[in-house]
Image 1: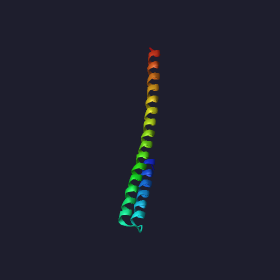
Image 2: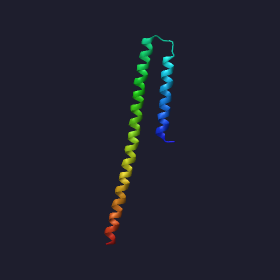
Image 3: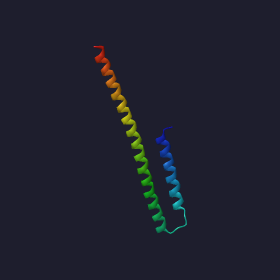
Image 4: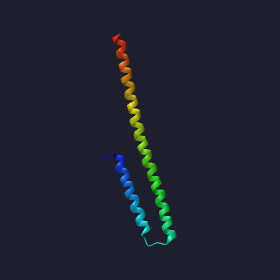
Length: 84
């Protein structure tokens, strides 16, 4: 199973648990709304951080692959010129 799917599953589970906990808590409506709002803000913050990390990893892998491709191209080009 991919890391993205696991992460999404964990994030969905945490979100569902937090919302159910807040909704079934014996607080007044305004307090519950404040808690739901804060949980939403926390979730967005966590999601932003997760996406930043994911994009950083993807960018790093892309840059490594690009560097490797350039090295192979330079090597192949020099071999072609040396065979001539």
